[in-house]
Structures are given as C-alpha cells and as structure tokens.
Image (cartoon, rainbow, N blue to C red; front, side):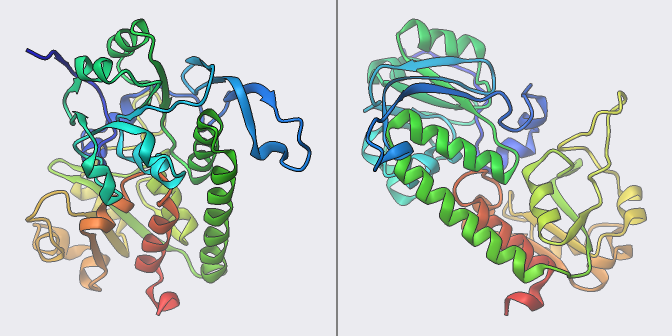
Length: 332
C-alpha cells in the first residue's frame, strides 16, 4: 500500500478557505532571497544565460544547489505549476496535484497529491530533480524527499512583485532566465496599462469574501488586498489585527462590522455551487449593505475563480478582473 502524508498545498480556493496562508511562517515578500552561481561570460547574452552549478536559498532558509538543469520536476501547488508551464517547462513536469488544472496540459500529468495528502512514495519513484512546494511545505515530507536526494524549493508570494521575483527565481534554477525575464516584462507592461486606466479615480470601499460560514475576508498581507488597493479600492478588512496587534491576512469578519464598514463593492469566488450573486444578496442582514442595494456584488466563477485565487503568472489577469469590478466604466 502506498503511504500518504498530510501536506499544506496551495490548492486554488481551498487554500485560502482554510487559511493555510495565514498559518505559515514567512519572511516579508522575497526578502532574503539569495541566488548564487556562475554567470555567463558571454556579454551578448549576459544575465539571460544561467550556468550551473547554482545555489538558491528560498524565503524559508532552505538552500538548494542544482548541479545541472533539472529535467524532471514535481509541482505540489497550482500556482507553481502555472509558472513552470509559462516558462516552457511543461515537458519536464512529471508530477502535479489534482488541483493543477491550468493549462489544460497540466491535467495529463501524473497525480501525486491532493488538498489533504501527498503520495511521497510515488514522488520518490518518479525520481525528480526538483520539487516545488507551496510555502515552506511539510517539514517531515521535505525530509523524506531530501533524504531521497530530491531538491525542494518553497514559494509563497503575496504581492505581484513577489510573484515576479519567484518567476525569475524558477527561471534561474531551471535554466530559463530569458523566458522568465520576458514573462515578467510582459506582466509589468500589462500591469502598468491597467494602473494608467484607473489613475485618479475615486476610491471605492471593497470587501472580498474568502469563505461564507463563518464569514472570512481577505485582509492586509493577502495578495487580494494588493489587487484591491491597486485597482482603486479601499479594502475594509485591511485593518483587522489579532490580539497581539498583528495584521491578519485572512480574518474572520462578523456581520455587524460588515454593515458598519458598508462596502460599496462585494467580491467573492464561487467556492461552492450554491454561492451566487443572488444567494449572497439574500443573506440575513445583507440588505443594509450598499453593495447589495446598488447591485454591485460580483462572484468570480470557473476559470476566473482560479485566476483571482492563485498568485502565479496570471495574477495580472486577476488585477484586471478586480479593477473591472471596482471601476467597470473604465473597461467598456
């Protein structure tokens, strides 16, 4: 019988719903990221070429030395899977989770885990050169993989800049520097176009629902908070703190406070089939909220729900979706 162990994966909406992010220790953004290696001597190519060996220390103090380009990679989080495909590394991916559903080709890869469990035996059997986990990963699982001679790197970006830095890091460790830089440049260009559109617009009070029972919001420290702020919104849950005065990325939020803060726009993702605009409007007490009165409730469904829930290469698409919800008149 194959042995399964629990692991905290970043798995689309489910990750945020169970507040895994808020419970994982992490350094600020990509502070402390170290990349060392032999740089190319070809001045015409410059930083676009990465020679090996290369040593990388991720945000969790985990150092990895890659002697050569990893040709077999396992991804244990959808956002990491999307990064790999975006860099043209799809043919090197040998294992993913059941929630890695984008792009379509990801669904053809070997399944080595889901939201609650990772098949370590299967991963070891696949003998990958590199495993990408969400956050620091599970300490016991990481040890099993490392003892098997498998390199492990963890990523947990909560800002657009951190996403871009992680993309460039994956580019370095996989020999895809050029592709990573081109992708980041394209993301930055699209981001700037969006920001130019909403420049000077009046700010709008916004609430983003992570979960409905109990009600849970995207607070300061979440990537959704940044998307709201960049889109010309004021995140009404951004000031939530714990008993020690520390800001909470995914705080529980009671109805009384929601009514008091009175969001003008109410955003959510369809994490359950019965979560719809109408079902939100019909909740007891919600009729007092401006967003309900003015019919400004937006529920991201299907592919859009994945886009706004994964801090990966499509995060600029998420920014555009949020910006359109807050300032629809600018995107007609």
